[in-house]
Length: 137
Image (cartoon, rainbow, N blue to C red; front, side, top):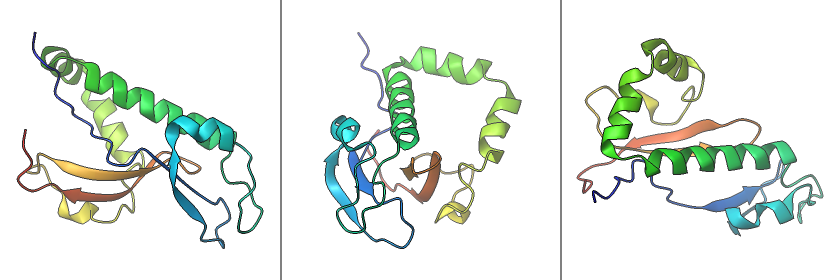
């Protein structure tokens, strides 16, 4: 049986930052499996909300999407990409997901592998993107 290619690799599975834009508190040791315990928890530094329920639900949806894509066989993935209307692909690109992401200007159609840092804070959004050089496939 063919092993499915891991199309989306999660480099860091977790971490939280305070919702207060004037607070710099972050804790990168909190794993996503423990997020539910942190919903509406006060920030240890300023007391503001550390994780809203909406941000928690967005993180779950993102994780489920990653797991679904990674579980597809190459044949299923190719079929998925083939049947997805061009308008849907364009809608995703134009949706603002990549808008203002650091490094987006260095990416074009010739780039095969990228590393994307995604935030689920108030919305699912790419905040950094970079080419991956010499990645083993």
